[in-house]
Image 1 (cartoon, rainbow, N blue to C red):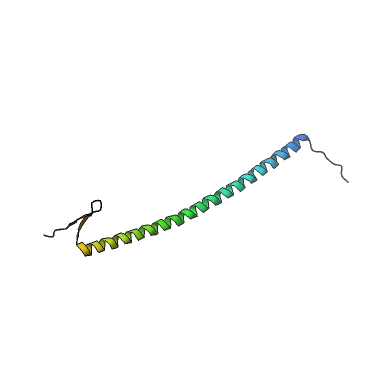
Image 2: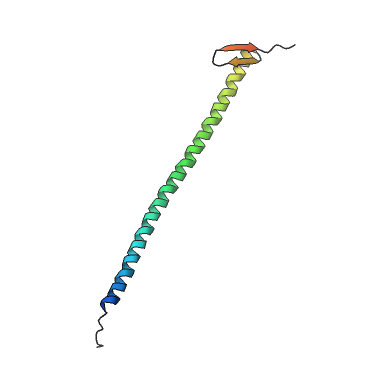
Length: 93
């Protein structure tokens, strides 16, 4: 059997420092992975929220066009002051 070799304290400290750095960077990778997952989930939710808002805006535009068409059919062409409720017909000359 070969003779045992005892590492110096300096060598053991160097090994411990490398292990410490390895553990720190492994922990950092884990934290960054979690952070990236959280950000990705927020981006995904944001995309869903954006699409829902876009659909709602399209629905509002459709409601607006339908309402304007019903007013035009009922009152003819003109301008409505939505604050006063006064409709001014267009005079065709």
